Length: 85
Image (cartoon, rainbow, N blue to C red; front, side, top):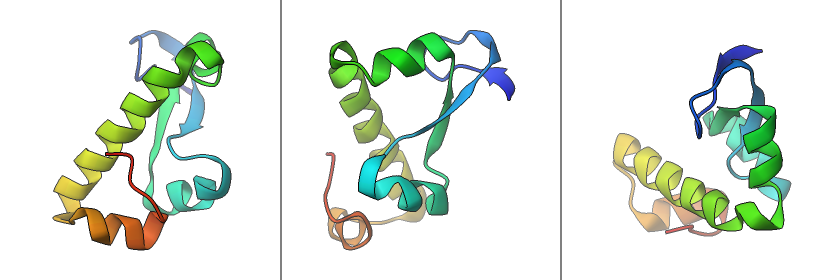
């Protein structure tokens, strides 16, 4: 996949990153909550050093999606089981 990295803006080969992984991965797919990351940023966000960046991304994506859908936090929690706000 070619595109632009969501974090650093680098163009080229991009990995699909599920903003909410693990048990939330299928829900991320269902709602299109993925971003493109270059290999370096993708490795970083999954590392211990990327925890703060990953949490900020989860927060920002949740807020943007809730705004887009005109949802409140309870509506989000009904689908995802938790909030990252």
